[in-house]
Image (cartoon, rainbow, N blue to C red):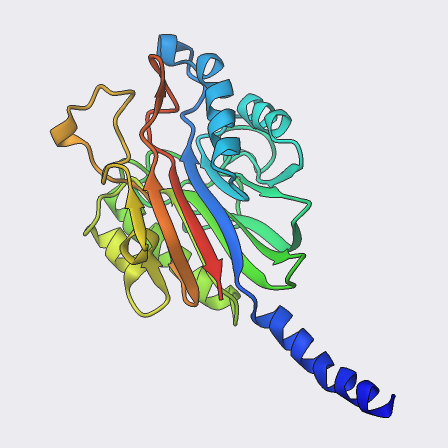
Length: 283
């Protein structure tokens, strides 16, 4: 009996160690849903919302970084994703006005340890502030999550850079990277968004500078779908389509698979952008 008890005691630290070192798999989606524009005709949100929510459920996303989300669209997604909660505020007033860049997450699996938002401007704490040469107000939503089954924590950032101001794009990249470096210590980080810049641009190169972030698609074991993400509901000629939606990750995150989702349901598009999806492993 004493020998059995001794063996059980020896095994306890191993059980604890295995739990801490287990691989944690997370399915992440970045999705510019296209704001609800009545001029979009057959591409209007009311014709796309069911398809969009079906896609999210089909791919089994655990966390979604979304862009261009108006309050009515936020409510639609909230209703269509049972078991999910969201973090986010409207970019015009820090409440409900204007586009959100929300983070939807599986609340049964993840708990929120910390969260916040800031504006991409010279006064990031002021709601509705517009920065540098930007055409629009731009916001970042961030959170630190704990995976309940494993106890592992990670940070998640989601944003939408300006589509006009080149100075704003570059300064936004500098500000965002600085915020991550200053506030995320000792845990992995995922960054999603519509950055409105192509690969090799100054803003993308800034985000990739140093040894913090890598582009998820560049380290994925499997890459699926086209290299481009913006198509304007199919109106951009194939040869002119570009990648402006990204997912960045830090070490020690492994990317098992990555996809630029170019799908239609009959003649209906998901959005004017491809969602970007990845199966990530926290090691």
